[in-house]
Length: 378
Image 1 (cartoon, rainbow, N blue to C red):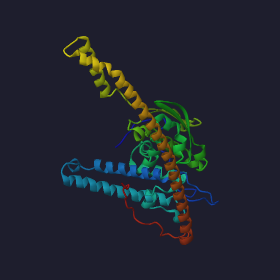
Image 2: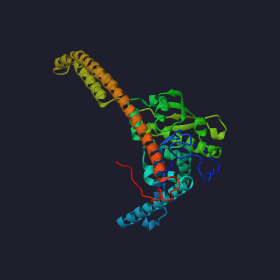
Image 3: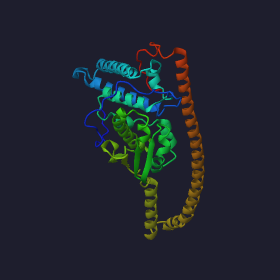
Image 4: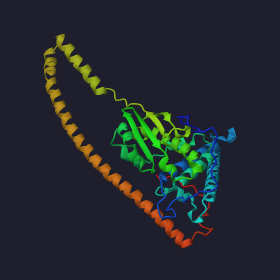
């Protein structure tokens, strides 16, 4: 089982139980017609997929030693046990989720949960995350699922910026994944202080869910933010220091993330040039055979250096133009990304409305299909 190891201060001493049912609608709009969406489908999918990964690992680990790995037939047996365990976990997840949704017209399927274009209420997010944690058996489930929750599309939008700039822009990037209140404090080239204020989220939740949601959202956010160096620069995960936590009675959660600086170092070209210069100088000063030619070559070094400086300036100008065009392209891609998300949200709302009008809220047969696991498309 995976354990990415940060913080323990906010871990609860005992799990908080879920209420029997949800109070609000899981997606679409509320009774007053206001959209309830807060959490994007990419988070929901990442949560379900990590739960299934944990279940598969547990199933493989529980097999007798002679059935683990080795010969092809043993590998097939382990794979079969993992698939059966994942199917059973998906069935439990759907059964528990739909049992907690009073209105059958809002019951969900595996396909629906795996659709990254959907958007869900914060209450639905809390229920699904808590159930997945119980099914996974991973005590650090929320941190670990957070560490793999940043979509490649959002990571791509951050690439033109440095790591410190990306952390400074967290509120902007976070808004593409969840409607929450994330703020950035002091940022240095290798560290950033981030604050999360839960009031906006808790206002959408019944009081009974406040402790549970605060704990899971705090850990999940830490995992997601600690993984930024990985998805942005291919560096190790950032170290997390928990400064404040609402679960311990503080007014807000605050964390300090510290990451490794990228090691540039001198290239082989620089060392090669230094060795060649030293050799030419030694040959000339020693007046070795044909030293005049070495002196002539040394005399040409300033010309060569001047050409290199001119070439560097030309390349710098081209790089500046390329970065400017890249930023313009990124801005255009970001607008398209936002437009795509809004279109998906509108489509989801339209489908909910159409389904309610077509089937009514008393149809017990809706979305009773058996669970089917669908892998992430390549």
